[in-house]
Image 1 (spheres, rainbow, N blue to C red):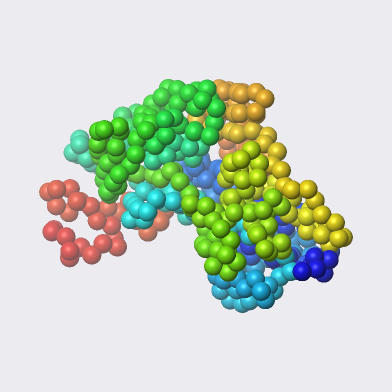
Image 2 (cartoon, rainbow, N blue to C red):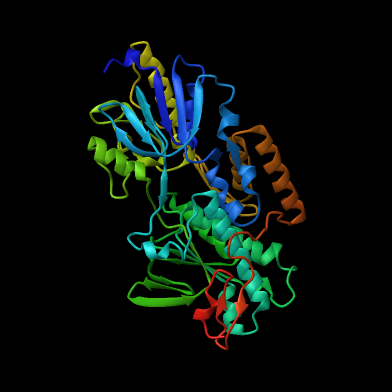
Length: 449
């Protein structure tokens, strides 16, 4: 294919990779179409703050049309890609088929339950705004249900939270829930003491934050313990039910009764990984990520690029790049530069990721930062984490709102986004002597009244 004639660029996905690629092409001599099934860009690293009521979804989201409106060569389509014809160079959307000269796929990943899809409704993950709102509903409903419960054992179950997965998301969730229970909510209820809450973090590896240096993992684990979080490493979950989790700890099988179960233990590729595999024959790794070339294209198709979490890029340090926002940002910028170079008949060296460091927050004044040449923990790490995340929020008004919200929360210890929403509200009614509950959607005729 003659790349010099390539002037129609289709980008699927408005996350960090897709958005950075689009912005970098904003003044290039190409026609860009950005397709996303959502009309907004989401700052995923702060979803856990939505899930725990610290910020509202709008504070970490920006409308794609608003971000890209200054670029007159970019069209935004609210749609979803369902198929691909690489020979005809067409992307099949739900509503139409659009042609491309260059295709950039940046659709990310979703939750991975390791073959136990029945756990999905019992232990929600955290990848979308809806996931965060569902988590928020379950977390705050647990305290509300405990406040009404008269049976001590059932009250204890409502005040027990189990988080599966000790990576950055699990660690941040555990720390945020601990701050809620032991500090923010401690004066808000009359029949329960929220400081009696039990937060259990289960990690299958031998330490939390496995990708981080051992010293930072140890510091994070100690900081969580200081907050009141119980941590079990080498704990493999074998069964999840609506009110309990069974896990294997060495040769022992243990069980914990809990009403709130949250999933932070793995990801798998989006459906576009399968579509690319079926249409181009590209290989995928065990979680469905697409194996890409050193320039982020797929073998045999130099005009199809895969970037962000969906890409398995193993051409640097003999291991795949992590699925984090900075990787996607740099890949988006690189692909945009390569497209512009190809229009001039030029090329670029292979992509190389520059790692500026890793960050994870545990709680107020507690975080870990690994910059490669130096590591931080404690208040300095927390300070760096706060400003790094605010800096990467897309629009200025979001940065200002989040800064004010965090400052208010910091000085007042109040959390202002603790709304319980969704189909299952707090209208749970006890209907029998066993203390069974139903929601308004439940068919009460099926229960003994």
